[in-house]
Picture (cartoon, one colour):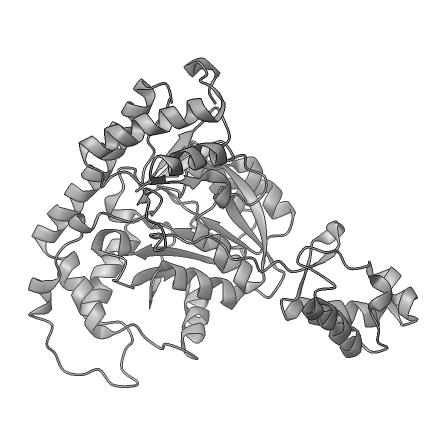
Length: 446
């Protein structure tokens, strides 16, 4: 394989590697020769080989893993949230909110008329800015807060990483991790560094190890972590802030996606002296996924750079959408509906966890839209058994970056099931566990 790489200049060597990839001679994950070996093989200066690999890395063709060497980039598709449209099975893997719990926007739309917004005007609607500033600053330690509006949380995180990183920069991600974050990091060409998550959220030892590895950004879910449902405890948040205090210029992004629906208090890992930070809150979980709007609070420099990332593309989020969000978010009846929705999700998840526990599959509900179900057998075997019973579930290994062990977990979205369907699914999960490997006593389950 290495003998086929040719070229005397960095550009020619890079073109040769790309041609091998295009022909299928090099496949995703395949290692490339070490720089010194490649230079000796081609009879070129070591710096020429370094420059060739740098060009390939910048183009996202290869990834460098430190002592692990240089490998052909893997552009495999990351599973995404949402309904599996090509399945006839009952989908309990969607990660979606309950459509019946999303407020009706029609009454608010009737009062949306206003003069047109033109180029050069403020990109944040004044009314939304006043409301958003109160919503965001109440939970932040830094005093100087700047607001940016983006087309959803994923858009915000993508642009925040792009304004701070270059290809192959390391990013600390929770493990197991939100699917969209995995996709964002992979498409951006960044190098994910797994930070394990336990019942209290991102672990201190994991974050410390990631910082030692040189991560330039950290993405943390302070509550209702997806898929585990974990929320930061007060002590864990304080311990993480203490670790980050020695790294004030590492960009810390907090994705508080469940915000108004959460039954857990918000606890931040952003300390008062941290220099590069952003808190992102989307409205999609409580106002609906089609409400593509998120508020980002950040330090001044991050806000300026984020604005620059918006400028080449969508320079602002529609003011009609901003005004609709404001009208809904400030409506007392809608606020009551949102609180009721949060209670509904928590109650339904608690009830389903109790069903599973009673059937010998001990489960504790976390926070969020989903349940993270521990199993005594591989989740893939259980999900296959569930398919035979008419259910489409999601195995935990889809959410894993590397260090976490989630091959014996299922993530289920059950809050919209009727009691009859919930009873049937719980019974089918227990039967699938038995069929996949035999029943264990509750004490033997992990």
